[in-house]
Length: 467
Picture 1: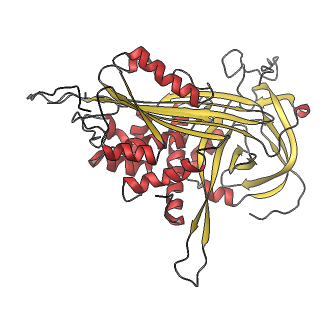
Picture 2 (picture 1 turned 180 degrees about the vertical axis):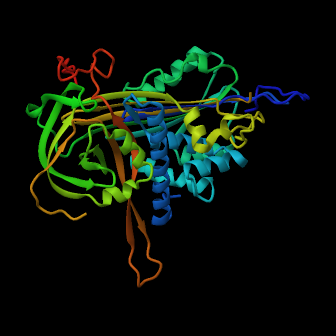
């Protein structure tokens, strides 16, 4: 198909079309890249070392993102999907070149030798959960009508990222937004709505790249509903809100970390390699210090020091929603080039129009209750023309009655084939963070702005029983 757009020689500088990235976590995550044109002037990781490097890059990038989001949203509950955001960035990276590609590699931590090797890393994860009923990951490309993607870019996204392509008329902005948002809703169990607005799309929009994640998992050890009670959750040393606090006494992996001034608990989900890791500061006001320390903490090292033991757990039921425009965040992390008029996404479209990223939006949602967790996230990028061992001890106490950090991790095992007959194969266990967040207020009426915190001298408004 030939482009329906005719280009004329001109002496003026080219205008660039913005690219918008939108991301939604909930344990649902969607990321959308919208690119706008500017008028002219293999099988999984090859070895366990590659898997470890890839996992480490995901972890480092996720912690950096979390730090930036926490810094700019100090009073909000945060939930986002590092994996969703990085997947969408990786999809855009398949079409990047020159300084833009180099900057993305450095900022996100991509160490693969080429696009194919990088795509293989993602393929191994996406393929593992392609038919899962617990974790669903979907990618999508919307392309301006009468435009085509380059063969290699399309092949990588189709074969490695399982991303279907569809032509659409962005000039009919409301209709296009409805189509995109409908796809997002269908992939996130209707948890993420209105990812893109009609005013973010126009006739200059050339491409929208989307990533959506939906997770719904049941605990291996569900909390008995009859044990849930209304209890205090401390916002600081004195102010509290009433929350629905779940209770269980069971064997979990647990760890105490004096260097973080915190303890940690891992709660696995049924029929999967997924688990929730809760990191609880020892102090009621210790969340900010914990978030700062996590910037230089290896989560893999942390979890490797945990052990199985009997733990008495009090955990609040909570819901959290979060949305953010990530342009400033990604620029602060070293990816400002793709938002500039010097961006190079020349490997994407057959059309010679230059492209740039104009916006990155991320939305996320999570709900935790006695049975398990449901979460979703979405990210969209729009591009336009330029312009330890277990042992028995007395039960530990893990009382989550103050702000805390949580992660939902996917356990990955890479096998290295022996290099000679005298050697045996070896396994390397790594983890990939699908969702990450911090809960400052157990989500309910208070977090939705319908109530206010109380002091010990005033009555405390109850949170909704719907939690």
